[in-house]
Structure formats: C-alpha cells, structure tokens
Length: 92
Image (cartoon, rainbow, N blue to C red):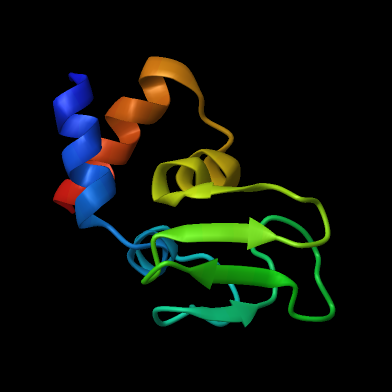
C-alpha cells in the first residue's frame, strides 16, 4: 500500500461511512453535526463532525483529525496495519 492509495481513500470516505462500516454504536453524523463520542462514554453530545463529514473533534478530550485519524482512534490501530485495514475497509 502506498501514500497515494491512502490519500485517495481519505478523500473518498467520510466519517459517517467509516462509522457505519465499523458498526459503531450511537447516532451516525450525517455530514456536519454534533453527536455523542464513539471514542468514550459520552452523556452529552460533544463530538463534532465538520468539513463535509471529513474531519472531527472530540471537545472533551481535544482529539481531532481527518477520517483516517478517526479510524485509528476507534480501532486502536497504528502504522502500516492501520493503513492496510483502512484501505481494505474502503473496499467493503
């Protein structure tokens, strides 16, 4: 897997699509919005999705990033394994 493949998938997938493909609990953000965080227990919506569903910020922890950063945060994967799993997820 190369950087071009990773960049292509990042441009292709939204956080909502990754959320759905990973079958994460809670309300899936559709485009931009604020929902409860899938990264931790969250009683009040404090997880923002913006930039057309391509970026996120968890206001309680300060964690933020793009759709690939979101994927790594919810799966706990890093490095080459994260890249390969992310690209494979896009193919599903």
